[in-house]
Length: 513
Image (cartoon, rainbow, N blue to C red):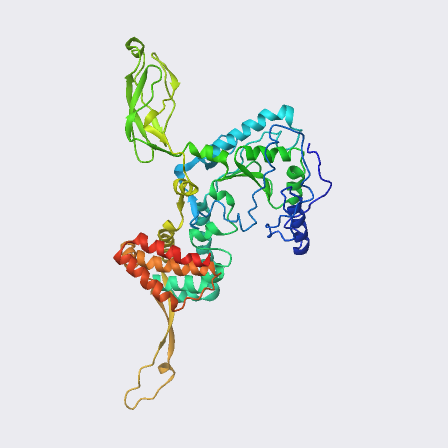
């Protein structure tokens, strides 16, 4: 049972009206013991001491640490934490850097160094339960990871699918603009210029746009671990179960001990502090160089030659003698898999068994100690803009191909003029003008022709226009100033390469960030 510390109540919930919700949100923000108080939940720069700063718990081994401030994703300082690198490029974790946290029920992935730190944090909490913690509904229960990395690709697919479905089933029937669509160019014109701008107020259509949206969970960074499925909207539960918990101070200090922030607005969520010396210790394990071909350390009278690729993935060769020949004679044939510079455990069973064991890569593996935050972003993440154009092209290609399959024909009213009467003849009713509705087949362009006609340069320019609209809520003015930009893109594309043109576009768009 949670022990109350502060004799106040917080009732914030999205069910409240705007005025009451604002009042309760402010109350919640000021209830957190983080040395910050303010009137507006968006203001986090004030250093005025909070009335709850005097809250302390009995002395313990963590008392040499200062009470750590939480991370507040509501603030401008942390709104894009883990989403933007130091160059202000939006980033996503590369799959090679993700690691599964061991849980009893959920499948939870986070960055590999975050997984290591979290597992040590949980072990520490479990060792402290008996003598240091009061019974509660959080730390003294079966604490484990419930949610982790959030895959932005899945969200992007859902949003773009909804974009298309709404376009076909709602927008076109309502506006009757389907009659204008006869080929891909007219499809793109109606979609981007008449339909999408209003939608962009709420839903971006590029992957980077989705990534930067405030609706996209901070978990997309791979730096977050949630230990509960509690409702993020319920301030009453946040306050009473977590903040107003006599173990809360210990919890925040323990989190900091292992390199984590506590999320102010979701106290059950830990977020890796990339500037923490402790978190850097966990990162250190993954910063190394490795020779592509060398030999392992010796274990159980044998070693192995090995070879790996540039990612540290490969395998060993057969066992080689390192000890007494008689002892080596009992070592059965076996090899090890190597993943990300680590030799995996191997055992042999049967008539000639061999204990489960691993090998070090010895002097072939050298750790890089002086890595920077730039190195962290470059080593563990990919820049999202680098795949935006290809994704956008494929989305619209599939949109149009699906549309033509669903609706291969359009109808077009045409005015048929009457035939002129012959000499001595008079016009009658049959000779009046008539409107005839003609059935027209839409252009079912082949994929080969599509890729040839709408090349990378076309999509890079289209991407630039879309991103400007996304950053200006669909209202960006595309005036003559863009003519020079488009000309520069042409020159870079043809004179240098595609990557240079794309990087130029990315830098140009930063004026809107």
